[in-house]
Length: 119
Image (cartoon, rainbow, N blue to C red; front, side, top):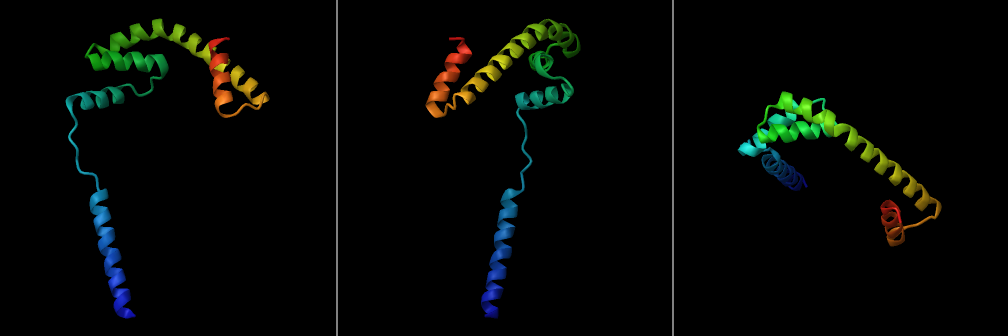
């Protein structure tokens, strides 16, 4: 019995060591594009929505990030914001209507598609 317990314990330790060795992430070198993406992402902290998108686009293209993001964000934000709000409201309305009709599965999908298109 003690022999079996010792073998079991040894097997468990060996299995744990093997899993740990494979689970430990190897240091991976990033491609230049991945590094640029990481750098731009770190620089864009605090930006959200259209401002973040404009900043990332300019940064990844290598353009001046300070001037481009400040110039591009105000122009893009109002149009994108109102379009998103309209879509959000439409989605809420369609969801509520589908819920009151107790639609499920394919019937709900068909209804939502039609409702969101405005038909």
